[in-house]
Amino acid sequence: MTRRLGLIGLAGALAAACTPARFFNTVTLTDPARQPLKGVSFGPLERNRLDVYAPVGGATNAPVCIFIYGGGWDSGARGEYAWAGKAMAAEGFVTVVPDYRLVPEVAFPAFLQDVALAVKWTVDNIAAQGGDPSRIVLVGHSAGAYNAAMVALDPRYLKAVGVDRALIKAFAGLAGPYYFPDLSGPVLSRTFGPAAEGGAYQTLDYARPGSPPAFLAAGSADKTVRPRNTERLAAALREQGVEVESHIYPGLSHADVLLDLSRTFRRRSTLHDDMMAFLKRESGLA
Image (cartoon, helix red, strand yellow):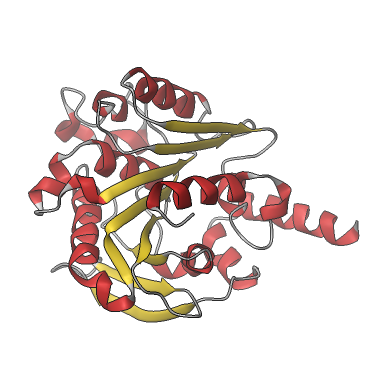
């Protein structure tokens, strides 16, 4: 009981901290995994760098996960999410964790273009690390879930870098903001701004037949990105005949739905097992 109370206290501290991901990465229990590549360039810019994690026992033609972190589009670094890369690698995925350009240096759609470039690098290079470039899944949390969803659903980003969207077998969005028609707030206005005129930034607009299967999750206690974002995208995809598995996990906050992928917290809910089962099935690992 004492240990459980301590973990709950840690979760609260993480949710309130200015840099929870960095702090969590230093204190959490991590899954066993290898890191064969670190700081590899996937594009011409400083933020175009990525790390790769792989199963301890090696991999041969393993499915590939690209994990895209959140941070309100204005913060985050791949090294803070080593634990997440290891969590996916321990489940049998060769895992890529890329950085992308941040606001205010850039605005929409630059960060989506960076994610597409990371996918391009993965398709071209991941076989050397034991990954199968024809079986890729995208996983993102918060702003990263938006990025993952947009790259998975709007084929223009992958087409621009010469990647066939059919290589994306599924995507998982955790606590993603998928519907925000009002850009008057300071975060959204500087992130999307004039480039988003006409609604080009709305994820719901790209829910179309033939989209990759989606795992969508949120916490009922999320006050940062309301669960209705997940519900709306799930409904829009289902209306188009797209396979969707969606969950609203009771009592989980915005941070919780990410932290529950970790060894430290994954027994708190079924989110880890639910998402892994879905991604393994869709990528042919199960």
